[in-house]
Image (cartoon, rainbow, N blue to C red; front, side, top):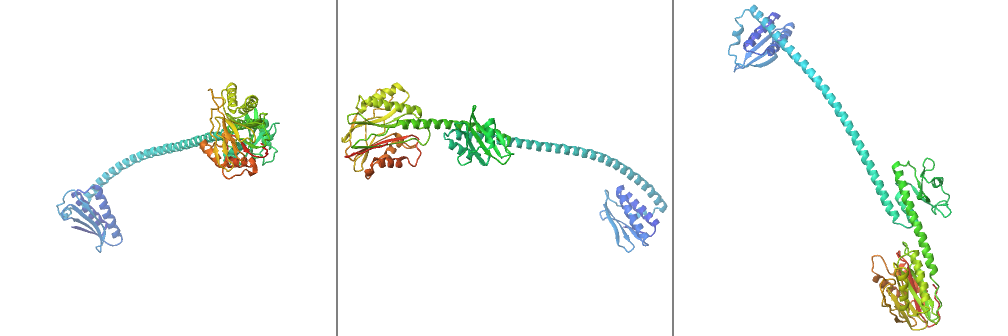
Length: 554
């Protein structure tokens, strides 16, 4: 161990020089030497300036591979300490390294070495400064590159956000366009499937409220060109309706009245005006869709109007051809005719009863295939022909044969079914023949009913030679006979046999003829068709054999 006590600045200089010699012999790095010498001198000088003394301590480790250095104050308290690891063993005693050296020589040598170390340190410092400057330049360039990269990334991010927003907008627009086309297709299918103007107006309210309007009105063009609104509104057309009808163009009066008027046109003909009450501004694409919808509404309303006109004309023509039943003492009769409640199923069913001039009568119920005015006209021709043929021919089978040849000649594409009854009031028997018609129903006075199985002979108008046969049926007083068309017994999803069974059930049972055939016919209609829609018109003819006089009215 080497302990160097210092009391003056000169002592400090000598102690520092001695420690430097030891460090030099021990091959301690210059930077470490400078650091330790600076720690020695600064702490020792502070202690001396304070009027005290200090001790510089150098001690070799037991394995001679380290030097423990330190500074203690005059009282022996440690002020600083450090351990330096040596690259080689230090075998020489520390006191021998500095004990025989002259102080002046020691100071001079240390001065020179200090200058050398200072120069080396300065060179190292300069080199490090240059390296630091180079690193700073590289760092600045790197920072500039990073900033440029950040700017590029920010620009790319902004562009990506813009593209995503544009894609989202395009997707939303495509979805909205698809929704509009879907709505238009669905609404068109619903509209074109209806042939009822009231139903079409109801559909429009269902389609358009509340998404496209708060209220919807359809103003129809009348026979004189006037505009007629719904029954529950004031019949004075709003200004928007009048302007749309006059200009034949859509009129959006949102800023004034909150109305959008769409003219309903088929070609150049004005069917009416579709009025939408709105409180918000109309989207341009929705406006295009509503204009297209108005065109389809116009087509649907025009189809419904033409259909209703033809249906009403056919029904009127058919009712005009249905005659009043004659008064026949000994045979009470009643007839009923009901047009279909859905579609154009009107025009082909008929009934007729007329005298032959010798006390006998012919009764008939028939059904021409097809519907509308064409069927009604053909029905009228068959009815008239039957009356003419009956002037010469009395056999029901022979009359059906003549009607078959007539229909095949006049309308090869039309067919008909019919059942003809020849009767004499008061006689207990009737003669019947059928041509492809549903079987008549027979009932005795006690309420037992059954179907009369007649040889069908085939439908009238079929392109084959047909043979029809007369069939005699007992009809004593109190018994009844029911002729009807298939509209009374046919239902969707049900066989005609099931319908006939239901009709038999209604026709049989306890006697209810005390009120005459009128009440019986009404009861049958109530049981069969009152609570359901009919796709076909209905015709029935009831005969009630009686001992006394009776009347029948159609």
